Length: 507
Image (cartoon, helix red, strand yellow):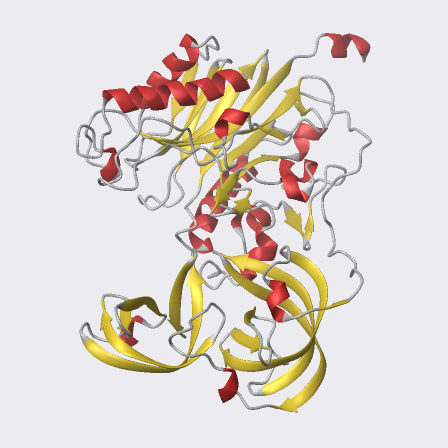
């Protein structure tokens, strides 16, 4: 085995969503703010700045292969390729999935020659981006890379499952023991199977996820491990890191792992190309962050139609891992994958207001008395007398509206800035309690409260009330939206937030 190890080749493979790299030719498919030479300031100067900045990241990362997302065209990709070469890290081979005229596309730069390429079109529509498939010659060994960019989280999980199923059909068609890597921006977190059921907006699949269930990074509600991986399962390299470090994207303080590198069983054997154990990392040099610690994304002015400022990088961080032509050799360090829910910590007795300052995740907190002041569908709101209210999602079967309870809170979650309880246990039913004294008034609106009565004029999605005040009105059933200009009075309506914006919700 020693001679093989001495001649082993090590390579670095990365993936990076570069956030809207458009060229300077008007094709008619651009996002409005990237139509060249308009009032938004996307011109030769800002284009060159974007190329220079992204090229700097790639040069400092020094990958042998890098999958890219949000590239408009081969012209933009060639400019980036030239920028990478100019800063001292030539990558002579480039590919882009450009057979479908989507605004942005998946692409790849490589220091290894391309043996063959193809595109996977999930559904033949512009709603989904093509997956780029590239087989490369790595020192005489073929390696196939699948570059993904699934539907954004503006759409439900069913849109991502379309891409997952198309990809999985292709993976199942590969020859046995093919060395391949699946990477890209999946717009899915590493623990999507846990968080999706808590999302009313995203969960239109009854909890089924593309990344965890279709690509089988999770089996029987347990993450796939490197020691027990079998085709067609995949190991998500995020599990090489502790949970607090599993993020490459930060949206309004909500850190998620939307970018992934997934590996099959063939990358953990003694043949071909294999994963270099525990080498997975997030690339985060200081210049990719603002002084306040936020990701230094590509900057546009907040005013003047959002004009491009010619500075910044991307709203994602690159991730990467090392691979070798030597046999796979596992390190002895323990995996950080949380295979089961943590054991309860010591029980604390707190108030609902304290739940807003606790970290999300598993907790073990008792609320001595909380009254159910609202219950509709999968949502309930509990509130302490003379205290705060908080939303409970899904785990509400044992709760009766108008009853007070002693509750054990087991899990907290943040959804777009809204604090929620997603797991609880009823310790004691304290009996019926009056709700009216616990409702709030229209001049003191707070999230996770219920307004006794509020009236005003409805105009284009907003309720104008009081003296010059307005609030977003979210109506789930569009047929029941008030007509513009009509006066409405709402009673017992809950207050919520969406992306930190206050709104009233009509279930």
